[in-house]
Length: 279
Image (cartoon, rainbow, N blue to C red; front, top):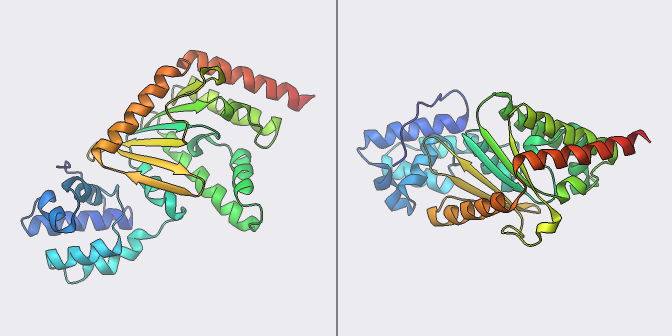
């Protein structure tokens, strides 16, 4: 069962809904597992709803109102809790990311969103949506950069990323943009705020050839795994699936360059871009 956490109900609609769900469940004398049974979900899933790490969908809200006799409270408030400034396929992962105590990420082709600079993020967003109005691109970039505020805390969350070497070599936005982007990463590494490893091209095949992976760990809820493709994404909480993705990440870190060598490679590539931009 997920451990209790003192939520601030005013911090977000989702936190409010989670806090109210816990109160209503405990008032009904049900454990998380007992509430989950008629919903065909695990007790851990109910714990994630209460902790705010998972979104309550409308069909669950209606059933919870029926089971807990809450007079439509969760149905009425579910809409506000479900609103997100992120795309639907990424919304749940992005919001869970904000609550995570440890974030482990594999990025095969692009710098992870939490580490992107403004020019790099703008170039990527424009490439994804070449005909979008500038205002829409501005909003996407702002939302992406807002996420990086997670790294303002000097100690939490732990952020550990593994890059494919293609992340360093693909000239997103040109040499000047890449030089700034990679220098930003090296500054975070040298400040001991993030851990970065690089999988060099010569390693060949590795455990995550299929795409990107993010693992989100929490103090009081089970770990989540998020697998993302182009315009798609899926969040997993099944222990067996999450365990398999953790093994994938362990294999990636084992095959990647150690952090010190990775930093040296990133700095070398950044210096090359700086010379090219100055030429």
